[in-house]
Length: 317
DNA sequence: TGAGATGATTAAAT
DNA sequence: ATTTAATCATCTCA
Image (cartoon, rainbow, N blue to C red; front, side, top):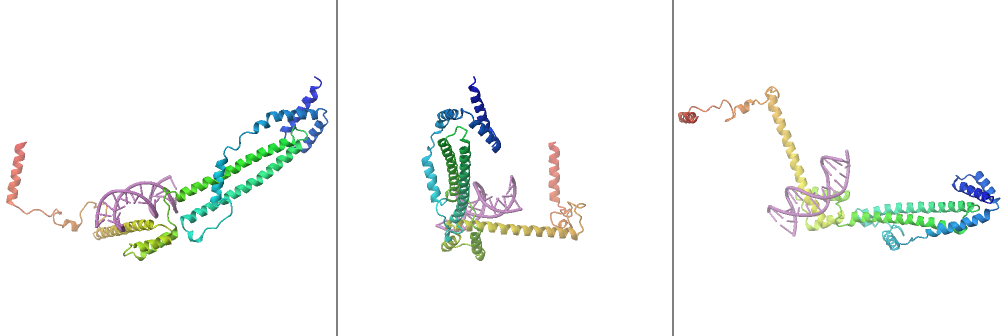
């Protein structure tokens, strides 16, 4: 009973020191009191033994199941220039899909590099901190040098996994870009502004006959960095839509004119829209077949027919 | 987020 | 075979 007391005390101190906020003075006191404890070396030994049997041994779990997947990511990143030497965009590709793809890829590369650097720095700082703290505490806590290294290699593994995640997300970004720019079923995209400018210029210049020949189509296609079929599509769409807008404008002008004429006739006869709505204007009243003045002249034959009809109606009722 | 713009696709016309 | 006209699907911009 008497022997357990110092051990209990030691353990209490140990728990306190493991869970407290780091405070240099308090820590120093605790250290001192533990070192002066005669049971210190032996208890520390026992605790270390226990710990190694229970904690660290179970940590050696399978880590390397996704080897080939990582290999694939690495290859992809290398091929698309995310890792490895930087490259510049070839000038003849500017304005094309290739160009845009490469530009976007550069952004991916940039953010990937930034993240990697951040993580490298953070990793190093973190490891250094952990190492120095544990070294310091190993004087009185049951922590051996090999345990520290093991722990550090474990955190290193964690960090590697984060790097894998980074690579993975970079790959995902690349795949997304490739889908967008190279997939046959990809969504439609607008041509570069410079391209539509070229096409529009030709269209306006040849507005009398906007039908480029095969040769011209090829030239335009080269200039605009699009296919001949796309040039054909563009002119097809442009012709029909141009025609439509012209027709619409004509219609609009017509409408304006009609309204203007109506307003003028209304004004010239001093007709107020409300008081005389529905009333014919004098021109209309004089039109044949419309006006109340347009009585049929007397016709005996027609009158006889009329009377016959009325008689028939009366007999039927 | 919705209306208009725009590139692609399709059937019918020439 | 090429073009028109309508329509689809997505993009763009306020």
